[in-house]
Amino acid sequence: MSYKFIDQEQDLDAWMDRVSDIKVIGLDTEFLWERTYFPKLCLIQIAAGDSIVCIDTLALGNLSVVNKMMNVSHVQKVFHAAKQDIEVLHAAGLEVCEQLFDTQVAAGLLGMAEQIGYGDLVEALIGIRLEKSQTRTDWTSRPLNVCQLDYAANDVKYLAEMTEIMSEKLRSLGRLDWCLEDCRRLEQPHRSVLAPWERISGIGKLETASFELAANIAAWRDKKAKEIDLPRGWVLSDKQILSIATEKPKTSKELSFILKDKPNILRKFSENLLGFVKSDGLTGSLGVNRKEPLSISQRKRAKEIKKSIAAIANDLDLGSSLLCTSKEVEACLRGDVSERVSTGWRKNILYDVLGSI
Image 1 (tube, one colour):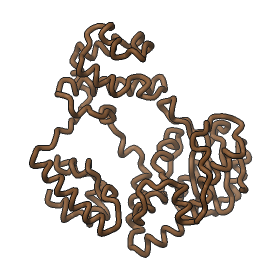
Image 2 (tube, rainbow, N blue to C red; image 1 turned 120 degrees about the vertical axis):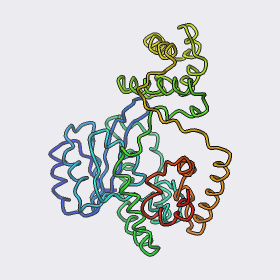
Image 3 (tube, one colour; image 1 turned 60 degrees about the vertical axis):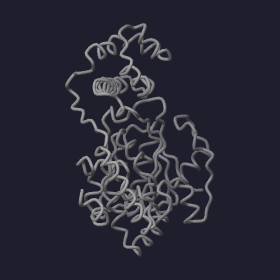
Image 4 (tube, rainbow, N blue to C red; image 1 turned 180 degrees about the vertical axis):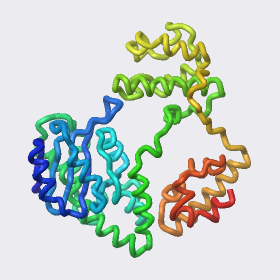
């Protein structure tokens, strides 16, 4: 396969000049996000016409020409499963604006699996089976070998071709505008940022004082993880936050039973954590809007609504969560209707089901 590995700014500038008239580009990233809070962008792959480049972002300090390309309004930028790529690019100071197309979003609206992988989609639409041997590779290692670069280049090689195929299918179903609407939502990665406490599974089951304590510790964990650039779970696991909130340790020794696998965190931050317990976590600064459990009548109504949505989705040959997720249904019953279901094509389809809430 023909592609170019670029690790020099002059080579990148020259390639950008050669493809400046291209109207559709395929984009993908390779990154490491296992040992740090912030993702480490290692490679950007771009397919423009019959030209593919793998850009070494570890070697290149200046990526302004890449950012410029991703912000040109007349260029369609095609990703597969764009959400995480957009987050990684944003963390690196790069933004994707206008004309984003996500082949995974398109596949879902064509009645295919909502989370279909790139390789499976290529096989379904193009009839080519791709090698998957590099899915666990270390993209920070240098030099990258031929197998790694082949894999990376393949991840963008078929994006434009699949976009053409799926756009035509969507157009024939009257769903191309649906797809473009959902893709525009992906251009704004900051809209769906979760509060630190919302990331903790099981926090909603805590009684009020324990909930507020857990929420404050979660906010502290997030801040500390950012400061030292470690994953949240390496600072404190969700389970450890819940244990501190429910057991309320009063001494370092009691806290050590909960943090027995994190001696460094215990040594450096036990006073901080015990301070939260002592104050019952009531700092009054978080503005936590706790989601109260649904009442019995609301749970019954939610079940009825989900059943109706499933029937509509079945008629459209779509996954029901693509129309409206269970969390969105429950939020509607609390009076917090999401923008995703209250505007655009979903509003028209779901109005009879959700409009009366």
